[in-house]
Image 1 (tube, one colour):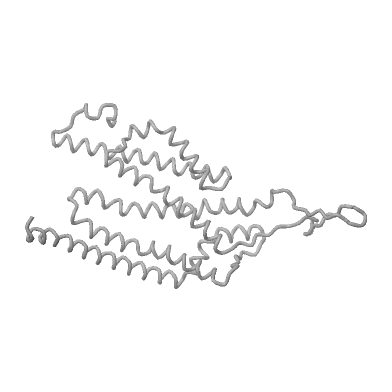
Image 2: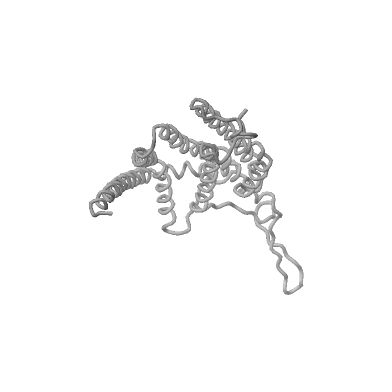
Length: 295
């Protein structure tokens, strides 16, 4: 290869790298701006995120407050909220920059297929986050905080050295040692964000399965045959990422299994469109699909 040919092939690469650098700089700037905006009212966001815990404490007749055990703890909690929420706030700009970078290399039909997923993915994540905040988190926190009401009474047995008698040391109006929830700001936020992230990812199931269907890696008929295994897998998932109470696990199972059924219909739609396109091109053959034909 001559030097001129090498220079000609290197020029597009340099242009792509320059374009990538521009898109990355704009994305980072959007993220920083979004983070600073969120940090300006991060206290309000913190109140919103821990509101399910506060409501449970009010119901139990306790003062709805959280504590911090280190001087820097609350600052880093607010900073973490700003990072997470700033990423969400700047995501439209970041997604737009990503789209502007990859769109020139896509065909028109690929653009039409790819663009809906950029919109559907954050929408489904927000749906999962809202589902978590208003349904799952209150149930989970009510279980965790209320667990102290059902455990056996804690007592301390001290031996009287003089007479050898046994004395029970108790506190509280009913003669029992009482326990009070004094939640840490950091730990309470960590479990709340963990639930939001877990359910937000679970709600991406229709997007993932549709993309796999478009890549012909899964079929609607195959997903129907795997229903019983999907039920077991979803139950295991519910047992891992939710607290050990039946209500929360059932809610997660119903939500994710409903998304699995929606995914089957979306994959079926993708297959019908593929068959229609092949028929229009005169390339469709029933034998190519066999038992995997879409009804």
